[in-house]
Image 1 (cartoon, rainbow, N blue to C red):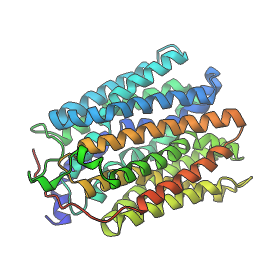
Image 2: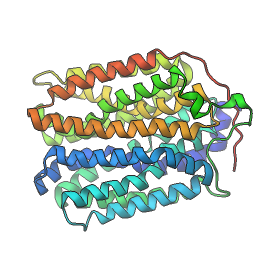
Image 3: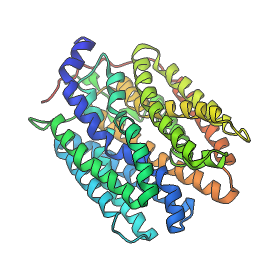
Image 4: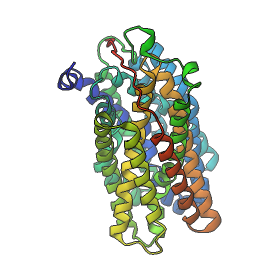
Length: 406
């Protein structure tokens, strides 16, 4: 099937899945930094205590990813994603009335993780990958850009609402997005018979089992690269706004740069997706990680200018956008689609855990040292290591011809 034919045939599924995924786990992960300063000021919690909530959420999501992948394979996207969106949306609304106590906050984060995992790329990624072959990189990049596209208009609204009415209103907005936008989109994307995730033509060479994959160096290079990159990017994702403020920027300018960060996630994700389709994927991934390491290193400047901070945001945003793309693309390229959901689940598990640990690492180092210098230095080393892991991958690709199950 030609590339244009793929988009002409499957754009309704891609649009609906992108919108649904964009209001779920990805959106919640990207907005955690908006609540740090308001929670610190309003409840008196330390940044490491607040970051631990994000860590619990990420670890809980990570633990659920492999199971959710298997459930999506067995039950279909239509039976899994809506349950996740409803549960997540209601829990966000519950945060508007629950007592502001850390144990309650932590317990709610774990429950949100349980449902959010059913709204992630592990569920929607194989659903889209099975429908696109020639432009799989672009299609996956579009799917994973939904949260960033939504955040462009939502970020200033969310920031203003939290500033004027408190952090509880911010969680109410997130819950409303999941229930009023995400849920209808998921149902529309999968209308008709419940659709499973990727199914191949049935030949053995169309996919690798998990047992076979974990015996290869390629699998572990991908996993190590994912862990290193998401540890660093998770710290920046959770702490970038207060980090920029600590470097002398005003809160208003830092919020504006966060909107630029979100916009760059969208641009970087789609651009990297197109490059993955057109160029050597390992080289593309390596260059993206090197750019992020350069951006992080620029933050070591004692008093960075707003222009320099904007450059940093551009480089980190591009890497954050590419992070989800490269996992799905590299796994499907090297191991096929037969067991893609399960393989993607293991990778997403590592990524989610690392994102949470990265947030905790940055918050803890700030509380102990009073600045982000040590965290930035560690992040630079992690990003360079990730670049080496991805750059050392071979180019062997499995040719899969998925049969779409409607």
